Image 1 (tube, rainbow, N blue to C red):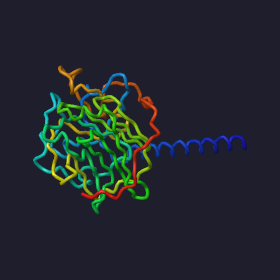
Image 2: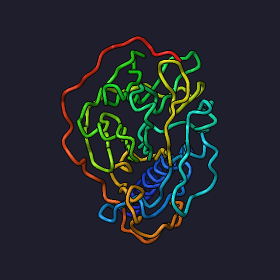
Image 3: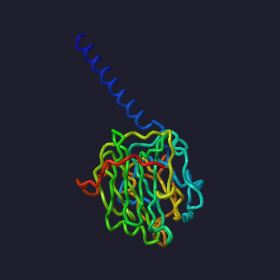
Image 4: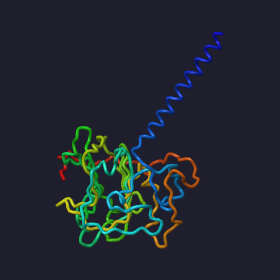
Length: 290
């Protein structure tokens, strides 16, 4: 009888632990912060296993009012006529994930190829910048800044010569992978630079978010853009190919929303393409204001 009782006690304990574990896993995956994202299937390399569910935000739709998934060639949008700034909660109703990929197809114009502008920025209610990506055409660099746990602003400057292509007035794809301690920059689907970063503060959603805005005077920057996406997965920038930049386009232009994708193997954790560099170009700086 004692042996029977012990066996049942052990069974109940194991079942309870498994139930709790599953509940935690479901809670982590189902927090609602990242909705399913409809994207073209051809834009991912077949070599890499993509997630069974693709989630994120189509910022083209959010900022430019481009509705629906484009199945044919992507239309280009001439920016610069109106400010592209909106309440953060309107763009990310349930918040922004701590790790993500930001991917865009764009080209600068002759009049703006030397401008310094915000590719992407989120600032809090007081106007202090929480996270930003700056494109500097004069220096041909890309800068990332964010607030650390003490709310100091830290900046990381990416100076690879591969970044110079972004300013030749041709179409290019810029990808940024932001992980908890690493940021990676991709140009035309190739890793150009990777840096270690410090721990950053959680985003305050009570402020505003913007794209393609000049730092000098806050005016919209005159560039062309086909698409800008934010994936809720830091590895998606590495998975993307550059079919949008080739003629004829490679692959079939079909789309899926992540909930019913074509059969693929289970996702295998991706190793980082290159070891992260230990060097950092950063400085405690006063909060940026918009």
